[in-house]
View 1: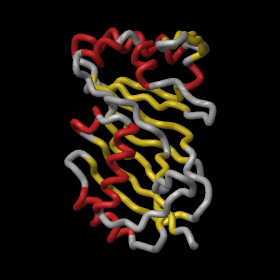
View 2: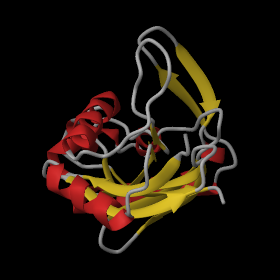
View 3: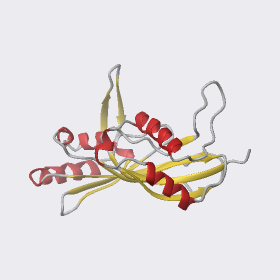
View 4: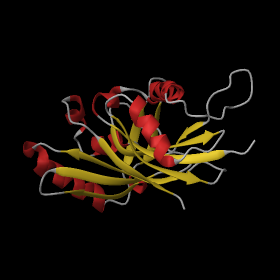
Length: 211
């Protein structure tokens, strides 16, 4: 059977940022059935539709331009596919763009860009912390998990960072096949993690794919 593969860009905004990656996958499976998209399925005892997200989005983070790839059993024009998805999607799940891509390996992410609004009272502190982090060559960080702790150097994963005059903190992170630092860990390294608990929203603006 000939595979027909499409790459979709979408946004996950508002209350949907509180939906986990696993739940988003289940939601998308139901949505594709409702939209009557002719999905290809895996083999075996528990066939699943062939859906591959370029990079999972952490719980609580908004995504402005995420990437997911679908494998179809028959061709559907991008215009028609976007129309069906938009008609079947809940508020906050925005389908932005569709492109046909050759069958083969899924897209690999090289980098991701994030941003967060910093309150006026914390901007001077954030600017100083950002200068220290940006000027450093190493930044030891301890990652705490329920079952263990691990240490790694956070600094190589931070490719660029800036705080603009309007208080928007932006930073770009390297993504490696073996893993990456998390955006929340950069926020923590800047001494700003408490803002996430007070309602600040971390946003992923987009991901950069390998050619």
